[in-house]
Length: 91
Image (cartoon, rainbow, N blue to C red; front, side, top):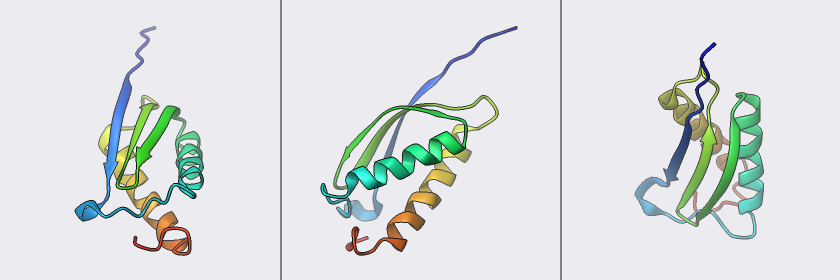
């Protein structure tokens, strides 16, 4: 049986370079992303970022395409940040 392990460096940037990620609440966002990865059978090795972007080092489940993962992740994080406007007001 073949074994494949691909690790991706994914960078998510905000629209027009706005800075909605407050340092006080970035851990909440990172924990949400960690849960998203876990629910999609992916392994999140590292996550960090700045107020206007996030860097992730992740390995995906073999059945998940990178484009699909990023698309779903962007929608999920958008919904999370929109539903928590008190923590991410400029978003």
